[in-house]
Length: 211
Image 1 (cartoon, rainbow, N blue to C red):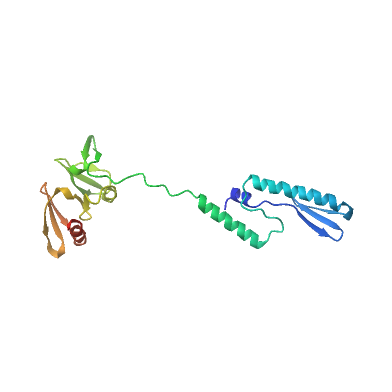
Image 2 (cartoon, helix red, strand yellow):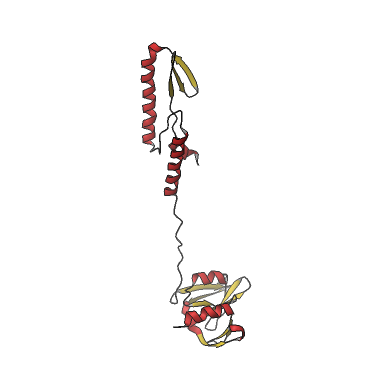
């Protein structure tokens, strides 16, 4: 717990204890023994000091006000209040600012010296190439400095389907689908490319496309 939090939680005050020969005032490490004839004056002084600290606690909006000797139960209760206050005032996790891009969104692609603006419904597929991905649209195949996993998270899953670890295909550009060995599927795109769909993803594709 930070020092600032503790300073607003606990405020030390003088301890006055009646003794046989008077009272003992403990404040800031000093001890002073007074005789009985000055008892009234010392009590008045102590009350003024206690009032000062109580007012200070109110001013700083303290969670609790503990007097010496501090009881273990009261201290535990004060710490519980502090933890509750900290949990209430803790900043909420920042909401993600990025949104899923839909088919009508236009994206910007820079591959070397060439730049492209293309709407997502024109993109036929994204394919892994090294650590990045290559976009296929019209007769262009520029490279994106993005991993395929990143693209999958940013794109509408009802528009782009992860056929395998290597390919993210646009469902609008599917020409035909045929069964493959081992319960897999083979997808032919309108641009003539043949994409093999893994067995696990073939099941997901069937569920996505069926009525």
